[in-house]
Amino acid sequence: MDLSENKQKMLRGELYHAFTPELVADRARCKHACTRYNNAGEVSRRHLTELFRDVVRDETYLPSPAATPEEDDKLFENDPWVESPINIDYGYNVRLGQNVFINYHSVFLDTCLITIGSRTLVGPHVSFFSASHPLDPAIRRGTLGPELGKEIHVGEDCWIGGNVVILPGVTLGRGSVVGAGSVVTKSVPPFHAVAGNPARIIRKIETAMDAAQGDTKPAVEDKE
Image (cartoon, rainbow, N blue to C red; front, top):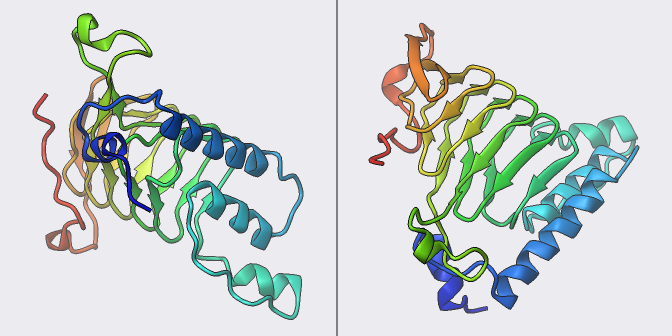
């Protein structure tokens, strides 16, 4: 299905209007999918995975059921583990790698793409804000005016502490660590720990991992 020009602008990080019928419907779909996931209760790992894939519009086929519940659970041991409740705007702009853990009360404002690399751990109450607004109130105009966003990319093997806020345009390099309560306004190079508001580098992480391999997306400082 062809995307509207307004939706294409949103995905490109350009000024767009969020309160068009198309995008209001997209957010409503994701809100209801999140509600189903958050209210799932005591269900199998298979069903929980199916519900989360509906949130993020992942249409990958589920494997055929195994002979026992225990064996069936193992089929999904590499899928992301996302604790409820979780809140996501659109869902289709969120990409999680294998063995990712997302703790309770995380928020994804996925106006633009938000990716989290494999084996990354995310603490409770972490917010990923790819959405932004014009500074000029004459342009902003509440729900009548345009907004915009920038992609967020979190590399593999990262650890993000609780109550962290990650702002638009940030890239966390592979193996980086963000201290609890931090507000990350600029990108972080691979294998560095940051903390504070705004977050600043506090140390380089010594690791047996080959830092020269870097990350799938290079860390580039936010120019704002």
